[in-house]
Amino acid sequence: MTIRVLLADDQAMVRGGLRLILEDQPDITVVAEASDGVDAVAQARRLRPDVCLVDIRMPRLDGLQVTRALAGPEVADPLRVVVVTTFDLDEYVYGALRGGAAGFLLKDAGPALLVEAVRAAYQGDALVSPSVTVRLLRHLSPPAPPRDERRPALSEREIEVVREIARGRTNLEIGAELFISLSTVKSHVSAIQTKLGLRNRTEIAVWAWEHRVVG
Image (cartoon, rainbow, N blue to C red; front, side):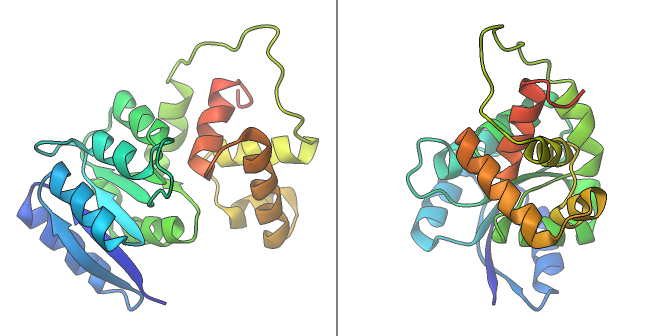
């Protein structure tokens, strides 16, 4: 198994640093680099990498626009995009997650978390920098749902899993917290996505905070 990665960042030194970190791993290879958003979208659509690492601030198309173009709700066959940025801003996080990103990582998160984010995205999971997960999602201040809006019929166990996802927990951590197996956690996550009409764990987390599932 080799995870094929596209790097999109307008700074050559940053791309070089990310490449060194990723290609030091035996299961990851960088198949392309892009210095602006238009080139990133074009190369991603042509090469279909397993994971796209995308910076927020780039010429021509910014990272949020690139994310929507490659992974947004209107995309028939979305790619897995992880936004990697220096800018710890609420609107960037919310825009990335709403745009279909499978993760949001700060550049100072460190090499280990970068590699973990790539592997998580490849496996269909999602990773958001721990320093961002709870604080930013909690303070996005989305409008409260209308009083007559009914939530989909999630079981009590599924609600517990949703809460843990919204807190940034991995499947292994959720299993340990709820005393259930990893395969059971994955089954619950799949059922939750189906019931809510969501595509990944990141969208589950956003849904949880919007609907006040997490206090």
